[in-house]
Length: 67
Ligand SMILES: [Zn+2]
Image (cartoon, rainbow, N blue to C red):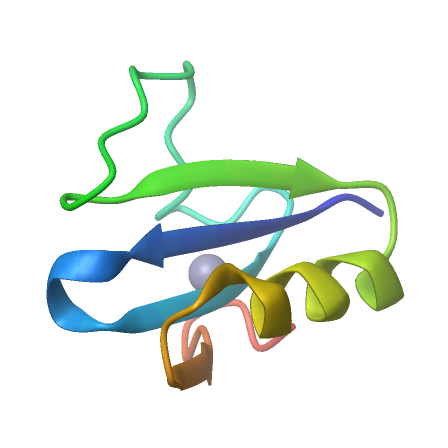
């Protein structure tokens, strides 16, 4: 299972998603510091650690895919 985190500094939020969530972009777009970047991790532990180190204070789990 791959996990994705979406980092959006403009709204001070990081969101955790599971692979195949409909919100995860199907093709990698260019990473935008303020608008948000998508990063994938091979397991949940690494994704959670990356969320904590990302900077934003609002850490969320996607309500759609419930990671
Ligand atoms: Zn999701």
